[in-house]
Structure formats: C-alpha cells, structure tokens
Image: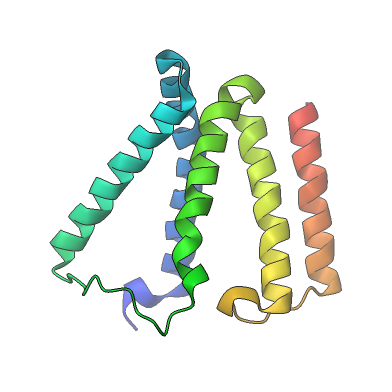
Length: 151
C-alpha cells in the first residue's frame, strides 16, 4: 500500500490541516483589523489560496480540462461559497470573539454537520449512522467546547 493512501497518513495530514485553522484565524483576523476591512483581508486570503492551488496543480503536471461537466450536479460547484463564508467569518469574528472561541465553535459546527451528513448520506457521503457511541462523543465535544470557551 502506498503511504499516501493509508488512513494513518490521512489522519496525520488532517491533523496538520486542523492545526492551521487557528493560525489562519489569527493571521487573517489580524490582517483584517490592521486593514480595517475584514472583507479585503478575506479577498487577499482567498487570492493567495487561488494562486497556491494553481501552483500545486501546475507542479503536479495534471492540468484538467476546465469545461464544466454537465453530469455533475450544479451544487457540487458551490463548495467555494462555504470557504468564503468561513474566511469572512473568521476574519471578522476572531479578532472580536477570540481565535480560540471562534475555532471552538467552528469545530462544534463541523462535528454536528459531519454527523448529519454521514447519518443521512447527504451530498454523496458514505453512510455512517449516528450510533449511541457517536452521539455521546458529539455531546462530549459540545460540553468540551462550552467548557473551553467559558474558562
């Protein structure tokens, strides 16, 4: 098995991605505050992201056909709206609410959303029902979030 196709690699990679979310919130929140314009800071962050993605695509040597495929449901192309919502939200709220508080509630929202998406197999996701164990885990995460932001 290729190391890049191993669940341990996936978990480690996503852990690093998760470590970057508070860093992003702090950097972009600070940028928005210094520019006195969180929307401009979000535009800058998303522009940097676009160029980074283009660079990775070019380095990979896999330049896809840029034609919109009619067999793909239109809503599959709307994921970027959630990225914009997240970037704007973090840039605007984190400096006022605190990076930790903002990220904690984002995490709680992700946990709730993932459970619903997996339970109902929404948007093409694999089916993973909300078992009693999973429900208790989600409840403990919610308690943990509320305890961490109050402390």
